[in-house]
Length: 52
Image 1 (cartoon, rainbow, N blue to C red):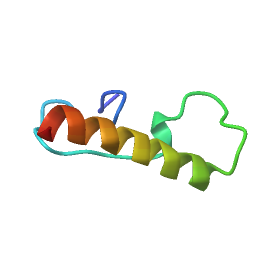
Image 2 (image 1 turned 60 degrees about the vertical axis):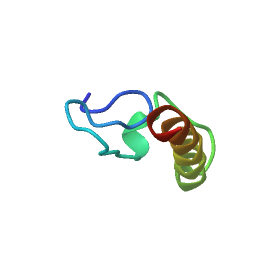
Image 3 (image 1 turned 120 degrees about the horizontal axis):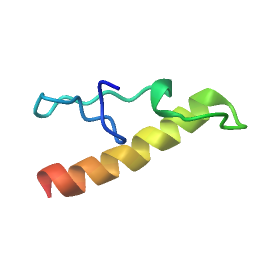
């Protein structure tokens, strides 16, 4: 994978990617809704860990 589990691009500082590739297996809901929720969760963690 080119990113870690929250979308940080490996070997590059402050570059983030949020897309469906971060979903493992089947989500069981509309993928757009799931990706939006995943991005919100990831950004909360990124802001806390990288900029907090």
